[in-house]
Image: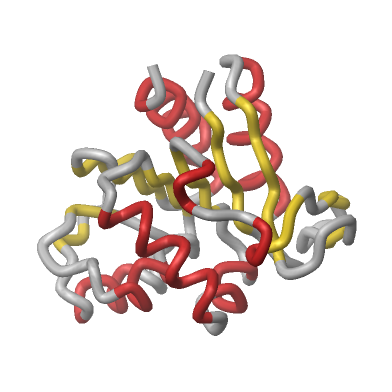
Length: 168
């Protein structure tokens, strides 16, 4: 069983949170949802309520084996907070499994660690990744060592399979 951190805030793309989290839990992993305020409920873009387990100030990257970053408008808000960026950066630097879908890879740009990494994202995020030095591919799932990225909800089956496999 792996301990997986999930960082989200309001306006996350609902299914990009619910589907991977369900797949991770069904595979026996322990999931902790992290935001700025514990006990709070954040709302997805389409109305899903997500209870926050811990604040970013209560956790350390060493507490977890892997990280999931769902898409929607959540990553753009999270990347404005230095604590969230540092949290993501620690996973990348430690080569821990790090998963992001759709707009999730926006957080990688803030870390300064995209150069030379293979990844994908939503169509409007791909140019940003490219200009930040990433090798961008238009594939349902791109795996670069510990980093697993995906494009849209249409790719969730492949993404979920890849992230569960990465934790075996």
